[in-house]
Length: 199
Image (cartoon, rainbow, N blue to C red; front, side, top):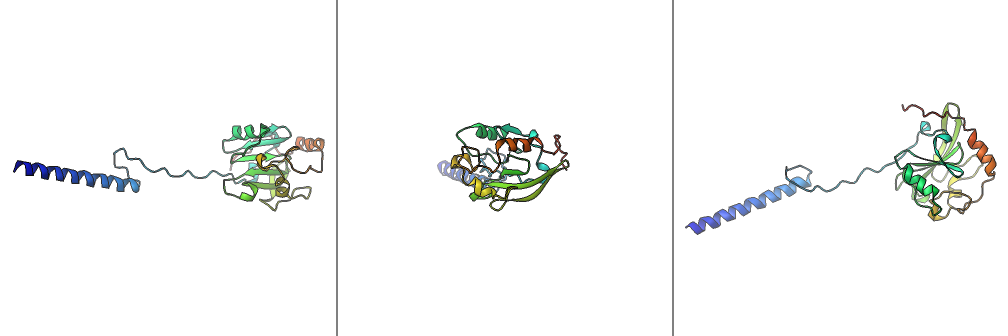
C-alpha cells in the first residue's frame, strides 16, 4: 500500500512539473514574464534612417573636410564614416552619412533597402542663402545637378568598392569645373555657421 502511494505521489509531482513547464513556455511565447529566468526571443531593432529636412543641411564648414569633400553623420556613426572616407580601400558608408562637394548638392545614406540601385543613397539638389537651405529636388535616379548632369548616372561609374562615391581616381567622369573653382564655391557657402535650433 505504501509503495502505491509513493508511485501516485511521484506521478502527480511529474504531471505538476510538466504543466508548470508548459505554462512557462506559453507565457514566454506571449512575452509574459513568469518571474523565472525565461529567455525571451530577441526582437529585431528598428532600422535607422535619416530622412533629411531642409534645416538638416548646414554650412559645409560645420562638417568634417576629407580631401576635397565634406562628411557628416547625424545618427552617431561619424567615426565609421570618416574611416571609410579617409581610406584608399573604400567601404560601405554607414546609414546617416551626408556627403557634400558643394553647398548645392548632397548625397545621404538612407536605411538598408531604401533603394538597391543606388546602394541606398539619396541625392539632393539644393539652393542656399543666408537663411538656410531649400530642397529643389531629391530622389534616387532622377536628380539633376546644377551642371545638368544626372547625379546617379555619374556615381554609378564609381568602382563598387567606393560605394558610389566619386573622386578623381574612383572611375567617375571628371566634373566640368576644376578643383580651384570647386574650392571657391565651397568657401562662399552663404549659410550661417551656427547650428539652427531644432523645431
